[in-house]
Image: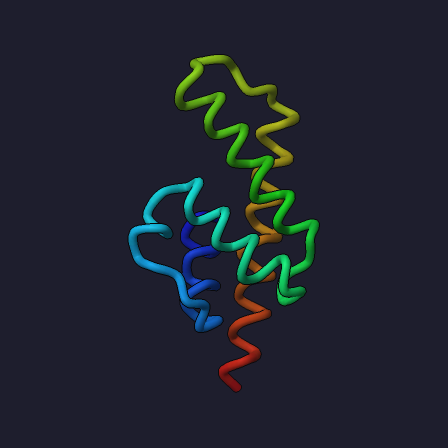
Length: 94
């Protein structure tokens, strides 16, 4: 999702500094500001990006286990998110 969000920002022509999009929090903020709040990307996808990031932080930094249902949900969200970014920005190239 991180790479798809980053690619979407680049494809959209959003004025995002490379340093901002290098961290997860910076990327999520820029994605929200330039794509979600402008209506180019549905709010639900922005919320999914945030929630999956919360799960990643739990797993990577807190060391707490992530429930199987939450992990399965995150995978489904990631698939939907990547597909939505492809559809949204590839259609702009045609």
